[in-house]
Length: 143
Picture (cartoon, one colour):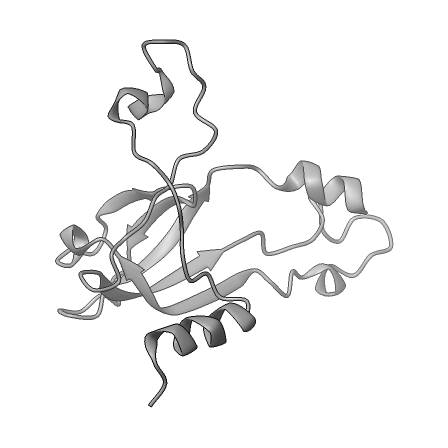
């Protein structure tokens, strides 16, 4: 059996995060420190030990072009192969374990989600309905 130190060395060598050094300053909550300091980053996390498992469906644009099929283009060649990403066993905040189908939530830094009608007791499913940033500008720059 590997010692704790050997396990950490193995995880580190595999590129996994094994340690995080940080401080918590409640005066900077919300980004407005009374002394004028600027918050460099905000950490959002869910304890894996207390989280619920859920299926999360990340929908994106169905087409890679804003106006598919215009000109001589066949719209079928402009389908976005990454229009759906399904994350199984996503770790979510336990407070939404009993979300009713249709209930809406904002997932920090990811967007807005709706509990799907496929949701069952102990097996919630959430669909992203709106991302936080529009990606058309990025898509247009790369095409």
